[in-house]
Image (cartoon, rainbow, N blue to C red; front, side):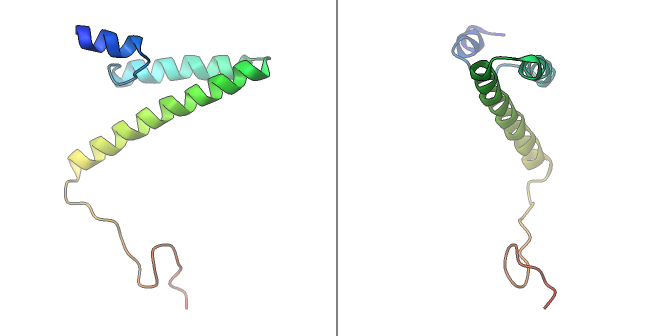
Length: 86
């Protein structure tokens, strides 16, 4: 971990963490959220869990983009989310 990673981590960035570290910290945070009796603390932990989820989703999407560079979104005949049963 370099000096810039240390500074970024100190400012709250999750990017310098490895995938395993991110998962471990998220699980510890989830355990604190589940066992919390204070509503205010639980609300803050809930928001923090979503921040971890957002970072994990970003990493998964980047990995998918690297593995499938020519992927396109499927478009159905009647629109994006409409059924084809008519």
